[in-house]
Length: 323
Figure (cartoon, rainbow, N blue to C red):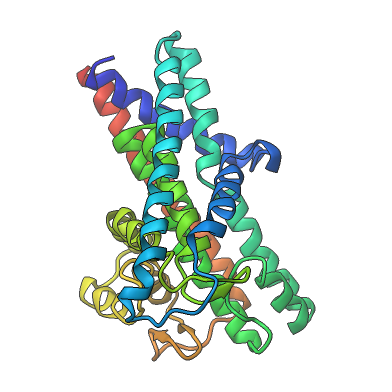
């Protein structure tokens, strides 16, 4: 298949996968490839991470855990990429329409848009019932301690999750699919899942992750760098435009080289303050978000995804006209 038809196939498959996501949502956990990735990471993580605390700057003690993490990550990435490359090769040997349908069905589990919207709305709905219910529902979405968060902080955390995962769970997988097909999307989801499970320093599951997850964290940073900025641009466009200078300044306030971009874009677009207690504040001059801002954020991010779909459709039409 030459470059022209391949680009058409990729674009059409992405649009069809978005439609499947809207109608069907996520597949059962027993069939979900990201769940399988998580099982591999949990299993290999018992070998990767140290069973004792290692100081952040103690390279001599930490290099073993770092090397194990790099090796396990690389092995997992190769297995995932090879599997999806083989599947894609088999699909492309079929008739174009059947290949398109199966490509979309295999792509769908590698991103999660409907579920993200549903979970963020669920936090807001729970928060309307009680602060305790809101905290409990938020704990499904974030790894941070939620027990001391105020109602405003619960809402801020949900909106930050919406913005950051618009990139991690939607835009970035589709970006890598556009570049490298199914292996690219699968590799990104593996890297992002590894970062979520291994990339945060501290104790988890009786293991210390100060060094074992460094490779996973840096790999996710690298693979997310361009998509995060695309996500921020889509949010800005969906909002009718934002100041690039303000967006750049706000994005630099977070410790993440990527997460600050979509979160800052959403904060500025909604004209609200977003932050993580004790870590950072975005658009500090803005008011705390209210319930109406959650509804606005969901509409805005939907518009951003629709904008992406529209641009992809235009590209497909242009490619078809010139094929």
